[in-house]
Amino acid sequence: MLKIMKTKFRNILTLLVVLAAFNSCMDEYTEVFTANSPVYMSYEDLREAVKLKVARELENPGKIYFKDGYIFINEELKGIHIIDNRNPESPENIGFIEIPGNADIAIKNNTLYADSYIDLVAIDISDVNNPEEVSRVEDIFPYTTPPFNEDYRVAKVDEEKGVVVDWEVKKVRQEMEYHYYPVYRGFKEFDYAMNDGGFSGGAVQPGSTFGIGGSMARFGLYSDYLYAVDHSTLYMFDVKDDGSPHSIGNQNVGWDVETMFIYDGHMFFGTRSGMRIFSLSVATVPKYIGDFWHITSCDPVVVSDGYAYVTLRGGNLCGSNVNRLDVLELSADYKNITLVQSYPLNGPYGLGIDNDILFVCDGDAGLKVYDVTDKLHIDENMITRFSNIDAFDVIPVNDYLFMIGEDGFYQYDYSDLNDIRQISYIPVKNDS
Image (tube, rainbow, N blue to C red; front, side):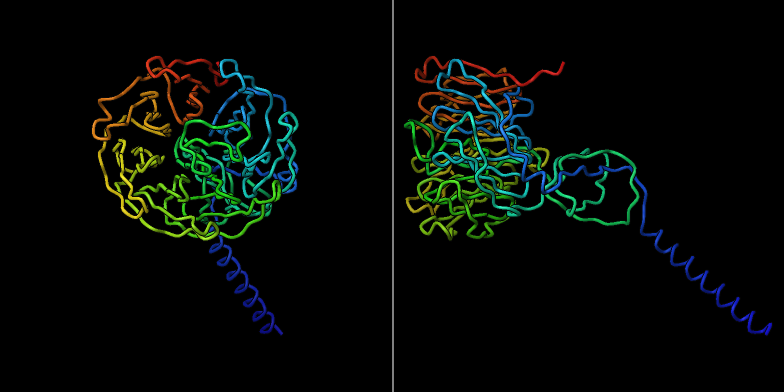
């Protein structure tokens, strides 16, 4: 009997040792650390969040868009400011559309299309004072998180809880796990560009089908289709029926894609290593036809009359330290691309073209305006410069230039190129 009890005791002791060893192994894969802990919004709340709010001040403005006398200014990851700009010398901030996770928009007829984290939202703006969500394509875009405090690691993200709308720095205990999520960096760090239906600046008639985006957006419209691009994938939607978008698929368009400019039935993608061109002869199946490679950098692009103008910005996430403007000559079929000339810049972001007038946002070096008639001597033909601003993106239309910068939204009258003048300004909120 005593022998049996000793045997049982040894078995129990062995089991306890095994359990202790197992727990010790588990501890080896669990850690406690100070981290960016996710703050969630449930999917249910996300899909009920689009609503009109009273006008609010600009705080962290992003991309800009123009349609029928109104300016739409993205408040990064928060929503869209509506500016009544029918009198450019006295613009009026009339409302704010709350859209969590919004970074880009495009407008066809009276429907505004916007991203909302992982969803595409369609909003009826036929009454701009009473916008209303009319449909939504759910779970179409990659799961993306907002910027975080880079002094700390990121804690585990549980996609089942909803989208991440913020971070809280605190101590967490979790099993060691590493999973990459795309992070929205803001258009001041990553550049995405778009231009709807081939517009490259100049005269636009009221009631035009498409609105006009700046060079830093990632939504584009062509014919009956809406396109959205991320770093490698082009998402395509049929928007023939206003307010009823539906996905028609996606395709890979390369890697490190940052800009998309639609012009003359072609897509021009700016990547960190060059420009790629796709034909839209079959709009649902863009076809690759050529490319032009350059050093690693961030690079918005605009196209007009057989030439592409590309700003390259180095530093930070953009790669090299080269900052310049490249002028490229394009063959009639866009298959052959030739570098005409390069010009040094300070730290360029967006740009816009109206016939032979080029507007360049050169970061903290300000807004620069050039006559580009002579492609070989553009640097000798600067028309004017506004140096006391930190410029990010522009839209030139109907002799007015709309510009978004670090400290607000500016408008200029360039009907007289000998006297380009600022006519209005909406400042960013001053917290001091």
